[in-house]
Length: 518
Image (tube, rainbow, N blue to C red; front, side, top):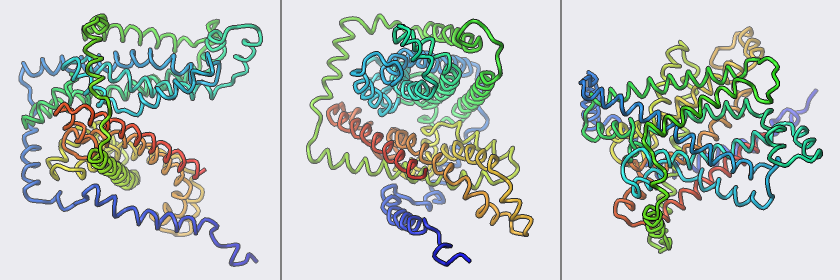
């Protein structure tokens, strides 16, 4: 018979310690995020929110407005597509230099990785705000911002994909005397083409959402139209914009799924090292990018003039030297902690809500809720939550929670559906209630996966929490918006660097936590 000692959970002490740590951290996080659920039921807030939501109906259908809405929709699509085209130009050489597979020169790797960290760490909305200050309102700022941020994201993932494929063909080509670029082109890319194409399509879908968000700082498209409607409290126009945007996101989501599924379909053998589907998608993408630049009338030659260069240099030099005075550093530290608290609270609320909804029925209704939550950008949710609970970080946490519930809930539902059924069926046959069956049979199997999804999302939420302050949701974003409005660029540089360091720290912490679960 097994002894009592052998029946004890070997990880009990570790779990207890972690639980106590979470309890100890909960109070300061809730305090920093100004957690106040009662504000949702405040009579004044309910009245303002109710009046604004009531004004959403009926949607604005004025012919002049619909014409403007159609132009903004085309502009949003063009910004997302042109931004992805620019991102690819940045990502391909960076991924080549970062990847350990056939990299051009070992010395390029640390420099390229540093660039990736900067490009990915600064949110696209911050880049857009900076470019708007230099180049004025319009889609150029949005395209450049998307190109920089998504260039860093694509390069990182591209490098990981290239390193995950079998390198034997590339090594054989190198041993035969082929150059490194040729070995990469014919020995690595054909094996990774499907996955690279799939991830690029997914990122385009994300860029579509991001292009709307950037409109809130004057980068054009549906976001700018939505921001104008929100500021004027014109619910009918805001409703029309939101309906078009949700339809656009759902169509893009469906197109993205169809494209990725078509890549998985078997293709006939052919002499080309790349599948015909990848070639077709590449040609279609090239035509779309060229058409988008033409639609937006972006002439990059104007950006390469001496006058434009001097203007950019003058603007950039205004950020240095960085303001490291004790007063500024103390305020920045407070903003960092508040931003971190908003990201933790928002992600935690979303994880709980997403799991509860993932267990709900009917699944069609639950999926509709998930699609609605994740289709509305965090900045739009923040505009609504500021009305509901007032200015401050709690509004930002609620906005993050609403959007992230749709993202995590969908992933959680898939994890639950894919979990092995045998343990749950055994408990059900023994007469155990369905709730206890999930807790003791299904949840232990999928818990590591759920935690991994939550941590991945936390990495993304920390970047978004840093910019929700642009609409009054506190944290670093609100401080940065004020600093730029006052043209205090040295202080703004301090805040941007804090955003970058915070993003890097959260990435490292999240990665270590995921490794510890393995």
